[in-house]
Amino acid sequence: METNKKEKGNKKKVMTVYRRSVIKKEKADDLYEFLESNVQWEEGIKSSKSGKETRKAYSVSMKPNDKMVDDVIKQIIFDSLNQDYLILGVYVNYYRDGNDWAPTHSHPGTIQSVISLGATRTLKIGKKDHVLNSGDVITFGASSHSLLQEPSVKEGRISIATFMILPD
Image (cartoon, rainbow, N blue to C red; front, side, top):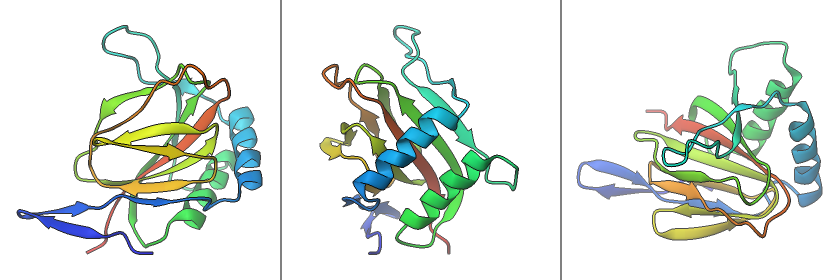
């Protein structure tokens, strides 16, 4: 499946492509457990209003290294992408439960692919809500997006966010 591009003025807009169960649920849940236990989680982004941490995070090195967890994450990404992209970076978010969230933000000039592992959560892209289950993948352009707070969710979620551009 190819990511669609739509002309908007002189800029190309990347259309959102949502693919369910790219990774089978059992494997996605196993990957969630592996990453939750093996990543050395760093302090995540803090809310500008409250100053409280909104989630844990981990930045993946795309350079060769001896970190097994980086190799696992890179393999998950390469297995899930449906098109050739130039990868700029990878950031992994760990939401411990539905109280953790991501504020509305954007990444101008990039295409983002998000792999969802663990609990089902709602990702808002622009004005549209996308319910992501474990193993789902969504790819979108530089639209503003956020992960909503859902206090009823008691389980954790990991999202692997890959930032990319299309090759010329």
